[in-house]
Each structure stands twice: as structure tokens, then as C-alpha cells.
Image 1 (tube, rainbow, N blue to C red):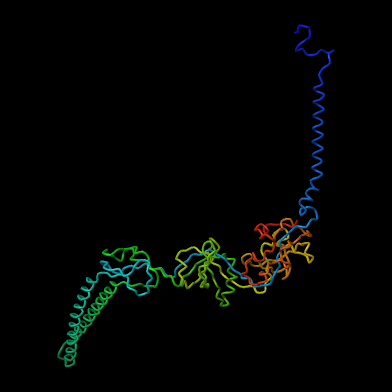
Image 2 (tube, helix red, strand yellow):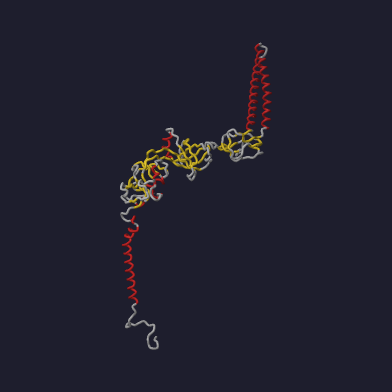
Length: 439
């Protein structure tokens, strides 16, 4: 196809015609892009270590790492055992009627504190009063018959002595006297039973404690077979707490109790934040529960403020012993790894650390006792241990005291909060004493 002047339109050039240089320039452009990308990659790869060393100097090779340290101190540390427990009253009594009758009166209000012997309820006594009078009448009649039989026996004995009466008649009269004596004893027992029933009509509190919700209303006919009884009384003072401990702790406890020691027990609420009561360990169960491998223990409390409530779930802390002059450090500084339990010990130059294997003892709060491996005055790292290794360089923040602990950490009491022993600018995190291995 051609236009008016004969020029071809839309036709590809022939072999003898020059083609356009599109493929050649496209190939050169691709090679230029590849070369530029390789150059940029090499630039950033080579520059990255230097930049990191400048921007994050503490991560660079040989750079000092900022850490928090604490100084091992000498003090007393309580050896305690914590367990879940249940507040269990020493006495819980369901008051039942011992006779059947109409309930005429209630002498208590729900929730009232009563003492042993206080009046609780009155059952209609009239049927039992009438029965008592009936038995008393029978007793008087049979006593008269016994008196007459004894007089006859005495006469018969005289006549037999005079040989005026047969011996058989005397023996018969003696048996009659014995029979009448038995009847009189039966009547006396019936009179006593009737009097006791009259006492049962007047119901009193068997123990001192708090009255619960009443189980029956006035006007009801109560019987001894009633399952719910009249009311439940729970003793609140003193109060006990039953808790369980693993059988592995038994030897530790028995060593103390066999010496006559009274082990203190402190009770906290379920969240273990509010202290409820302080008492002593009272008794230990006589056998281990084989299904759980635990042993039950009972602690007693005077419960004067009534903070312990029956069937309440609590946390019991048993003080087994107290370690005196123990070497104490924050538990955040103790690491666990291939060497076992170890710490990063700050060398005397305060610029490098070394790995020191330690033998740990009991813990109290955020403190732990070191049985071997450290001495009072040694400094250990408590914060920033995750990037340390043997011989690592460290730096202690300027705001941290030179001894590695706050001023109030000099208090050697074992119950000092562990936060007082953390000397870094930030408090140590829980993961700092997790599973760490020597780098």
C-alpha cells in the first residue's frame, strides 16, 4: 500500500532497508540497571557495619553494654512455704430437736453470735409435762406396794422363826418384794425420761458461734427425723485453715516441729495481696494422700477481727525457718543455663564481667539466698544480662550508686522488697532470670 507520492505505508523494511535500533538500546538499558543495582547493594553491605557501629555503639564489637547491677548483702532470709488453703471451722453444728412437738418460740436472729447455753427455741412442753405427772403417779403407787410387801416379809420372817409359818410362804413373799422393787425402778426411769423430755423442749446452743439462716418457722411440728434441723451454728473463734503441701517438704517441717518449735503461719486472700490473719501450725495429718502426693496441715488463728470466713479460699505462708547472715541478691541476677545457676559478676574494674557459677538457696519475694559462689559486697548484673558473655565490657549508668544498690538496700532485713536491690535505671524484667546460657 502506498500514498500518492509512492511511499510505502505500514510495511516492514526489507533486507536492504535499515531497521530501527530499539532492541539494541533496550539491552543496554537493562545492563545499566543491573550494574547500578549491584553497585548500590555492595555500597549498603559494606557501609552497614560501619553505620551500625556509629549509630549503635553499644552493639558494636568491643563496645561497653549499659547494665544494672546490685551488690550482694548479708542479712536474714525467711524460709517459707506457700500453699492454697481453705478456712475450716473447728465446729459446725446442726441443731436438731430431740423430741417431737410444736415449735412455739425462737430465741435467736439470723446471723447472731451466740454463746454455748444460750436459748435458741422452745417446743410445746405440755404433753411431756402430763406424761411426767402420769409416771410420777405410777411411781407413788408402786412404792406403796413395795412398802407393804416389805412389811409382810418382815412378819413372815418372824413367824418362820417361831415355826408358825411354812418356809415356802416366806420365800414367795421375798420374791414379791424383789418384783416390786423392779417395778419401782422402772417407774423411776420413766419419771427421769419424762423430766429429760421437758428439758429437751427448751433448746440451747451447744457451742459458741454464729447462727446461720433458720431452717424452720414458728408453728411447725418438728421431729427428730427432720434432715435440716432448726439452725446451723458455726464456730468462728478460734478458726482453723487446712492447707496442703507436697510430700517433699515433710522432712523440713518435721525437723522443726520435733524440736517443739511453733511454726508461724500467715494467711493472705486469694490474690495474695491482703493479709488476713497470723497464727501457728497446730497439727499435721497422719498420712500422705497417695493420689496427689500431698499432706494436709491445720493452722489455728484467734480470728478476733473475724476476717477468716468459713470455706473461704486463702493462701497460707508457713515460716519453716530463718537463715541468719545469709548472702542475699535479687533473684533477677541469677541465670540458668549450661553451667547451671550462674551470675555475671562485675570485676573490680567495674568495666567487665565474668561468669560465676553459684549454689542457690531459698527465695523470699524477689530475693534469693546464695549458698556458695558469692560473698557480701560482690556486684552482679541484674538488668541487661541477655547480651552479656564472659569478659563482656559493661558500663554502669551514672545515676546508679557506686555500690550498685539504693541507699535503703543497706537494710539487711530479709523482708526488704527486691525492687530496692535493683540498681539499673529500669527495674529488672522477669525474663532476665529465665533460661540463659553462657555466650
